[in-house]
Image (cartoon, rainbow, N blue to C red; front, side, top):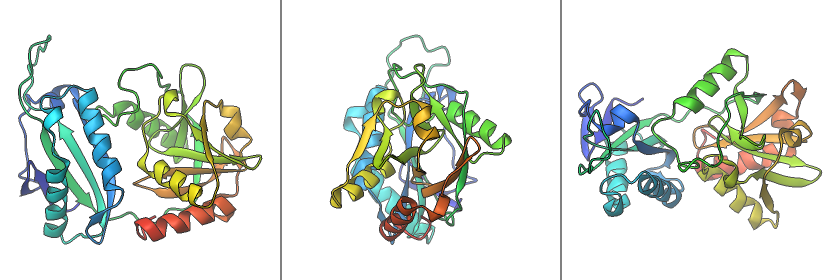
Length: 283
């Protein structure tokens, strides 16, 4: 991570940045975040990321959610990137609920949320991933499904267990056994000449990188079909890709021990090259 962070528009050394330990964001993980890329000072897919933050804040009923100003976040992000001399970098923006009662029981919440922004260097491109199957389910009927919440412990633990088992990522299922995505990545696969991904109704987090892939494919007349699919879909996929702002587009070399094309796949080659051209060499 770079040495400077932005807290409510103030640029501080990371060692000096702080907020009250009684903030609801600290006590309950009440808040939302997004991870994005800056390319020569311009945030990639800014409108989608800003909308994701606003929608998540409203879903959480954060105080002041209706008056949030994405324009101020953008200005703070650009100022921080300049201060860190990092015009091309990766950033995380978090909207964190402020002061909260430790024994909160429905009292009115009246403190405005904090905005916290970090930047760090873009990670270098990674090789093909090995993917397993997680036993951490997602409930598709949860009211906050689809939002990227600060209370991120379940996907983090699921990813940690996958890595202890020797995988880079793992597919998570919902209560009906439908694929929801990876622990932190969206999934896109090709099977029988059809390009598929999971429906948001299955419970996965809304992915800005998947939105980019859909738009890219549509420009060449190809449809990316969203639906409710069991894990057997991926068991028989010809190619499987991981997508996120952090990893970009990453190919998969094996799923549950079955060998896949990895970087040599046609779809992987096309989307990796296109994303790298659009979003930087870290893709």
